[in-house]
Length: 187
Image (cartoon, rainbow, N blue to C red; front, side, top):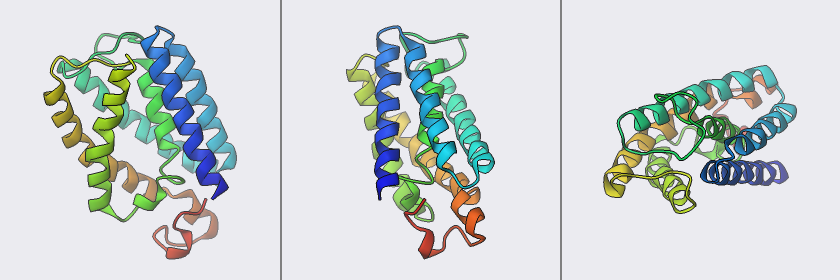
């Protein structure tokens, strides 16, 4: 339980650093905090190389997703855009920090695909909405953006949980099936 709580708090710190850093034109603040969160997770992981592969895969998916949303005009960011067609560096860093939760504080979603989809459809848009309220992201049309985000996250949450399940470092560490009940919630 302490590692789950530490993981959740670390991600929340990264989330706030990324959003507030982006909102106040300090995009590298969030990047630095997210890198520290990823480093902490890799230090705690029984198989850091495998965990790093999962974090990188989820980060690439997130970068592609947010870049698509920017490109299609569903949302825009105030700072951190290194290239006009790419999501800002801090949102990509936030995706990397988010990936650190998939084997720990969000590990309970693995194998529960309908629940993961529902969690994503609600939690994803709420996170972006909170980011909007803090000035980190803006929407030309809030209703359309929330609908697109809900649809995307209803797919992305189970996808990222599935990737984490396939690369579950806990299972590799003990040589067991990652869906084994004795591994749920532990890490």
